[in-house]
Image (cartoon, rainbow over all chains, first blue to last red; front, side, top):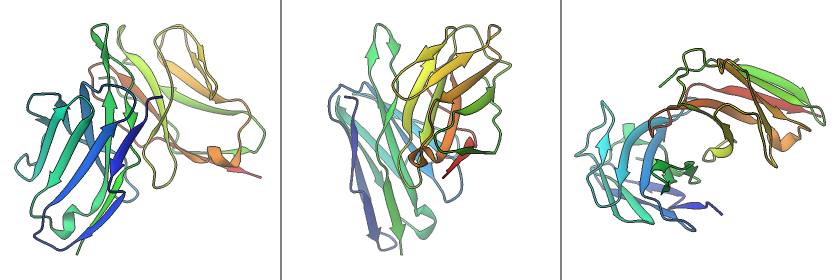
Length: 118
Length: 108
C-alpha cells in the first residue's frame, strides 16, 4: 500500500514552454500533497503544500505564478512549470499524506520527475 | 520544527548492522522522529517513525533515547541495496524539512 506515482518520469522541453507534472496517490486518499525540488548533490527543498480543494501554500522564495499547483481531487495533484527556463531544470518530487483521526499520516513520496529545459 | 544533526557519511560491511545516529536536542514533546532514505535518482522511501518508544518494522529498528534528544536507526543486516542517503527528520507541523542526511555506503 501507500503508493504514489508521478508522470512523466522525465521530460525535455524548450525554453519558454510549460510543463505539467502529475502526482497520484494510487491506494489512498491524499488530503495533502507536497511538491519538492532537488538540484544535483543537494537535499530536497519543499516548494509548496497543497490541500484538496484549496489554494496551495508556497514556501518563501517560490514563485506561485511560475509553479502552478492544482489539487482538484483526493488522488491527484499537478505541478505546472510555466515558461520554463534552463535554471528550472531539476528533479521534482511529490509526496502525499492522508489525514486520519485529525492528524496527518505518514508522507509517501513519488519516484520523481526529471526536467531538463534546453 | 526541531533541527537534526547527522554524520555526513558512514560505511558498513555487507551483512553487518548499520547504526545511524541522529541528534535532535531541541525536539518538542509532540514531535515525531521520522526516517527516510533516498537511493540515487529516486524519490525518498519511508522507513520508520516514532514518538517515545522504540519501534521495529520489516525494514529497520528505531531506538529513541529516554530524553528524546537523540535516536538511532538500525538496519540489522545491511545489504548493498541499502546504500543510500538516510534522512532523520523531526516532524512537528505537517512539513518535512530535509537536511543533508547521512550517506551510507555498504561495501562487500
